[in-house]
Image 1: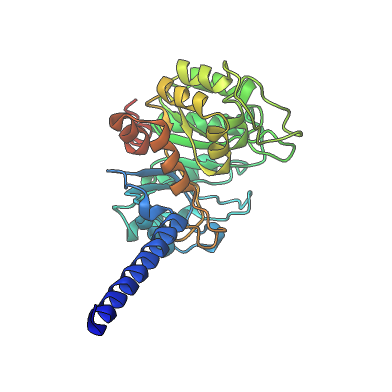
Image 2: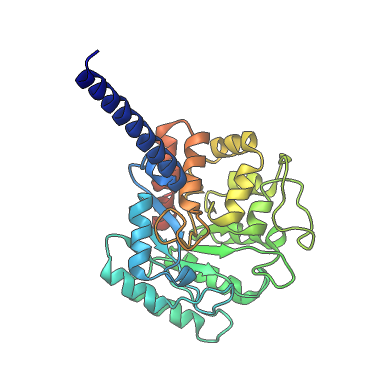
Length: 320
């Protein structure tokens, strides 16, 4: 072999090795960022987003939606700041006017105030489409909570409720009171969310002072299965760590749970990251995690489209 041929061979081998290393780096980078290898849903309606979660701006919220393939989102205010997020309904309405094709505005106001129903009616006239996230330190059986649910029934609205049965929690008493409201108010769509809601995927629910995040195999016959089976006006918002942990603790059970309630499972993220890859959130994106989980456990494309989009639209419009 001539010196020229040897040089050319070395060059080609070096180039091939360099290309292989670059490909490996790109593969690792794609796996690290996660969303780049994730197929985009045809349509994705996130039923649970906040704008200023971890100081995220409106523009960063839209960037999160773009990077996760989210077509539209219910944007939920939290006017009292309970739960460490403060977001005014007026801010959500302003964002809606900036991005009318992306944001579906909900409203929320302190239900302990005497003018709460008047304020909600005003938000209705201004274009809000539902209430949420309903999250004050009141028991679910409180008459002020019921008055807001009754108004949603009158307005034909959904309401997203944070259920947390801890001592300083929110809407405590789900097991005692939720079914009463589902029976009494047929038009309102109650969207359940948070720790106690998802703990009740199992018939074995530990006391809240022991844990709000049960682990291990799920025992069949849980309250969620019963209520979702009996009441089409109840929907399950899978967002945040509470939803993800519950749905991943026993994936065989979860696959059957999805099959039993195919039109009442709502994709929601409650994700605070800015870019769909966990920027400002320890490298984690709830939306990306949940999209992967649904693709793993729901093989049928029609049912997957229901979970990603159609079910949230049914909850929004009252077309269950």
